[in-house]
Length: 236
Ligand SMILES: Nc1ncnc2c1ncn2[C@@H]1O[C@H](COP(=O)(O)OP(=O)(O)O)[C@@H](O)[C@H]1O
Ligand SMILES: [Mg+2]
Image 1 (tube, rainbow, N blue to C red):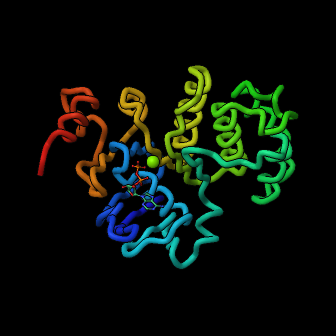
Image 2: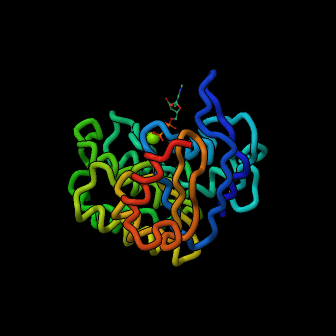
């Protein structure tokens, strides 16, 4: 569903992502872990066509994002780490706008109702987004991502700012999405969530992939936190 092949991206002299190869199959929840500045956001933004990259290739369901960005974007929902929504719109106007962009049909209202109730934000949809907390904006971004039934969901730190109930709802929705044949690639610092939720995990350090594979194999008999901290301390 998502093939990242030898992705390299620099900002000036700084190599943010260095020859990274990672394949995410249908049905997989793939967690992406690394310390601050490791290159997670740069990788995720490259995958959704928000930034260009220096070399390598990225394919979404076999389609090159470099050659066919629009086709790829139609298959993807992206939730950034700090959703910049249109503050002057109300929540419902924003969702209507996104539904229009993606051509969501008559199921729109039903979907908005179900999702906003699941995230306990239905009563706030008439209010302007400028009055929302970070967590409420996060919920709105998640709802908008799920509106158009994407194949691939890419999320940057989705659990930050979510209350426990919303976190639980999101985890259930992530699993359902993958059970239906979708795939999810997301970054997180919440290692115990990653350990329980992810089928596979990749750890990135200074732009380079350090380890990737099935969660059980990556963590072995230790906790993911132990493995992560050990890798972080290792000087190569
Ligand atoms: N727009 C940018 N301009 C210059 N450097 C950047 C930019 N975005 C990220 N970087 C640098 O690239 C590296 C990787 O950043 P990022 O991908 O945001 O890491 P992460 O999401 O893992 O914290 C960091 O050293 C960061 O300072
Ligand atoms: Mg980041």
